[in-house]
Image (cartoon, rainbow, N blue to C red; front, side, top):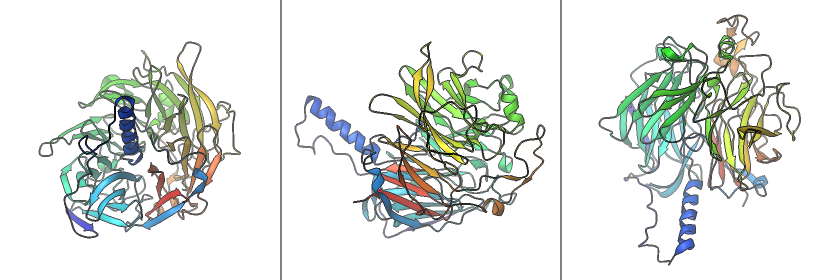
Length: 549
């Protein structure tokens, strides 16, 4: 593999600016004053970083400590900069979801940098203040894919990278399946490359948990079996690689945007797509699984009682990555997929004793059981408000189900999709339940939302979600009866993306980017750091929105 590396000028060893030490801080802080000071430092550190898809390993989408944005001032957002990158879009995809790291030492000084990976095997680092390119890396592999790429199996870099801030490394999974660790300030190789997954498999966002990098695989691209793959990067010369295959003969893809989700202690979670369901034989199609790490052993699972129907109609639960969050004494998991059903699960005991009893299920969309254009896609967001209330935000594609719960606040018709907001409450037996709060305005189609200080940010992607020509409902098991659309056909009838800021408590629109974003986007995400919001589009452009000064 050949790597092309570009830096705007010079080179030096990169590291993060060290935090002030007690010897350097001459203030006399005692008691509560010292505690308050430490809390402020921690809050500032969180606010300046967005290190992985969905902000954190639990995929909450919550920018904790980011208080520069508020319901009162977010209406003054404006485009601060836009940068077009030298990346060729491939098979609908262009740039991964942005990541942000602050206090990075570069040859030009200490900066906050924005990172995106490109579908054509690139990685870019941009100055967060100006959008100027600081460095870029291009991977060139001598290994060629067996088949030409298309949107189901694109043969490109697909997984959002992840950042180890302490080590000063961004981990990137190249198209040929090798894992690279690049210096945050320069892009120089600090780890690998090491073969992680088979070349040209379809991989999803990386997650760094206790020194181990995780990714998930779907679609059986390049004959790669679906499952979870892990690499221990704490020992660069001897990395340990594990895998957990969830279906022996294909299917059960884990293709939620965030890949795997971290829980408490030594557990991760994933939702699987259509496939065989025989837990005794190690097959977990149409299920949510809890996996012991780092050994990658399934400890628990939840299979809906209609899992056979979900598989028959291609209604993958695996279309979204679950989100893990705490409420009171409970650890909770929210999951959902193309079937349009939202599942609330006890993360410590998925599906109760029979593996089929959730805390709650809510039908939100897709009454027609279509395998495209409807349901819950990508991922979720959660938020704990100052009053201690826990909120859950769900991106819904297509029209709302006639069996959906009644929401006290709505904001007009939603034929293309919307965001739905719930608060976590308790039923008569003191078990957690979801209380409907609001439905947003129409989104075509929504990306996973993110939250900062009482504001929910959502992206209406403008993409064409149609996948096949003909009826979008399976006529008989295993048979679609339709022609799969080409890349070019799926790029037609698109609209430009729109960034919205909504009141997290009411769903009221506080800001709209209008026609500022000039193209659509497929399967990416948002990032919030230092009071700024970052987005990308299909034309390989990165956008930074900031408060008007």
